[in-house]
Structure formats: C-alpha cells, structure tokens
Image (cartoon, rainbow, N blue to C red; front, side, top):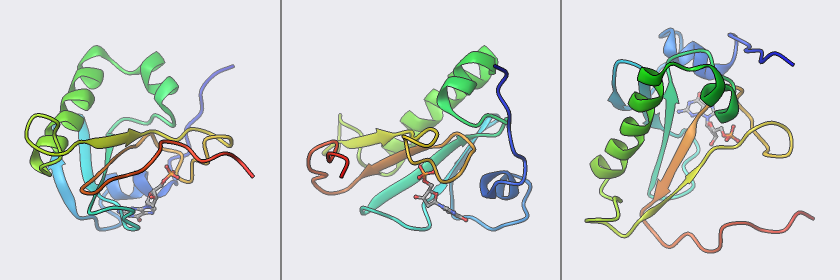
Length: 126
Ligand code: DGP
C-alpha cells in the first residue's frame, strides 16, 4: 500500500508559514519548534520539511540527506535545550504513528522531552 500525506495538517501549515511557531532550530531539511502543549520543561517537536506522515513513511521514502539532516537536528535540539546526555540529565524521544500510536498530527514529528524525571516509558492501555 502506498503512503499518503495530507498537506492540510497543522505542521504543513507551519512549514508554509501560515501558522506561527516558536522555532528552536531550522536546518536545510528540518524544523524544530516548541510544542504548544508542553508536557515537561523541555518539549520540542522536530519535523522534516518534506511531506512524510510517519517515521516509517520517512524511512522508506526520504533521501539520505533528509534522514541525516533530521537525525542531526534532533541531536542538536537535545544539546541546545540542555538535556543532552553528555551535559544534561537526559530526555525521551517519542514519535507517535497512526491510530494505535495516538498520532494527532499526520506529519512526522519527534517529541524531544526532558527537563525533569519522566517516569516509566508507557502506561498500560485502559
Ligand atoms: P502527537 O500526538 O504525537 O501527534 O502530538 C502532536 C503534538 O503537536 C501535541 O503535543 C501538540 C502539538 N501541537 C498541535 N498543534 C500545534 C500547533 O499548532 N503548534 C505547536 N507548536 N504544537 C502543536
């Protein structure tokens, strides 16, 4: 089955400049900005500029340059926000996908979350 992408999602609108954002980092292929509904002192979303809905979509169809840029952008955000494991107290990366992953915005985004103890990784479904 082919991947699809809805260019009316809110992050596509942010990338087109139709909606403002609190940018942390912009690179050739990626954008990082603060989550509007922060769950921790550090909560930044890193997105590729290309039209990819999920991580598996990105991994399948993005260029090597996009993939390298995106991964380096995530690492740079960790350093810039002070949570990087070499100097800070660590962080968690989350990339929700699809219905079971409870993905609200269908444009790949990695949450960089840190700044306090985050607790266990998952809570059981109820
Ligand atoms: P997810 O469930 O992984 O799809 O999380 C989507 C996140 O996006 C959620 O933490 C809130 C955030 N978000 C939604 N709309 C906006 C927006 O317009 N601006 C910003 N900065 N964040 C948004």
